[in-house]
Image 1 (cartoon, rainbow, N blue to C red):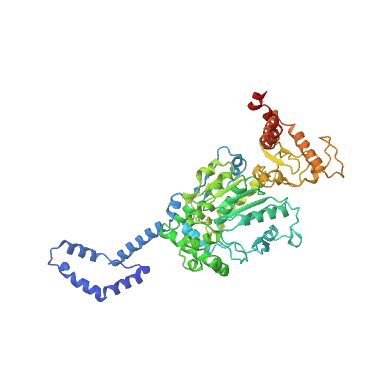
Image 2: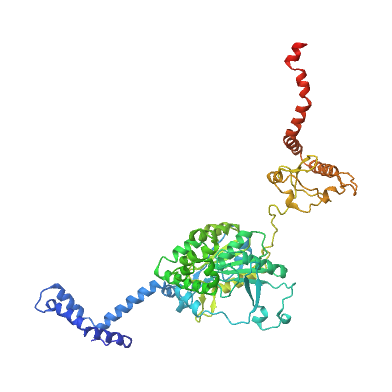
Length: 571
């Protein structure tokens, strides 16, 4: 008989104990007719052959079956790495073929054009993600915490890590950054939740961009000469991409990176509850959200369904009883659709690098907006074959993360290139007057209180005629009709060199005010086409016809009676 390996001795002893168990003896007694040597049953031959196989062979077969199951369950790729000679897999880049951003920046990044090889003993997305959660701690540095207060009463913790803290050199005096400093600033937007308390009623929301917007504009206003880069991870990446799409060109960010974004929250919510291994992540994230809710129990108890929060067994349950109630969303699917960043990808105007692993066990590849990323010339999507969720460990000791090297190189190349984004002020309706207006662009009517003067309002300031409140000029006709009585402004009675109308400073007559206003409007309209003049005449006739018709009817009333048929017969 083949000797039993040492590591299988404990298992063999368990098997021997089971054989001596009374129930096993009873079963063997029932099979005794089959095991009888005088029996000609085929089952007797099969069982006798099976009993002749050593127990150690059964144990080895069982161990192999468990190994195959775990290899598939954990999605290991160690065998593939061995067959490829541990060369790793190339990085797939998705971009627009006419993108100057790719040609000028990404094409020069060696890390993105190289290969990624996961740590051999972490050759699984689940092992990488789990190892990151329990052992993948960042290096210990002394962060300087700055509490940023929001207008709604909430607070944001800005943890500053300066280059002097990393290099160990005293670059800044008393660790104070001068406002004219040109050193690039990198803002990292973290993932699912935070561990800080807040007195505000605004809680976790996967699509809330107002806090990020306030912080970014604060940093830009305080350090206007410092290029600002933003890196978002997981849910933070979804918030970042949504913010970039909402603000477009009018944004003080030089470049951005989104790591492992969920993209479409509705697809992600269905994916994470599909398989057993994903359900484990779902449950783990739910426990984290419940711990976050415990920090804000007084307010969650007042604003949401606290009993439902405690009994939640999935992220969808938590969002149903907490996020949707606080955010006033009709349904969970409504919340997921409105807060997903997928619909904002085509509006991103900032150089954006997106990194998503194809084997991400939390954020599925089904949600990646491939076509939208390929259409936008400002986006490059990098998709490694492996890496897990925010892990990407590399090296035999798993001491570094691949995506950190890729982002560091990318931001360095972008900073030294002319492709950094420059903020462009976007004219918003009702706030900025158009440079070349015409009456066709703004067919509004300004009705003066005295004299019944009617003039078309155009949104064009003259040389010395500046309006104190531009919103008054942009009121539509319906609003002007509701409030026809308007006091003449001080600028309406000042002298105007273009119209050559002199008004005494002591003259407060409403007639002079209305006449001056009317003449200035005519002078402005005279610079436009003849079509606009005729349109003005048409508007004036239509709006003044009721008054003019009544006057004509009263004036010609007697003459009409004089030429009536009765009087003609008398004559």
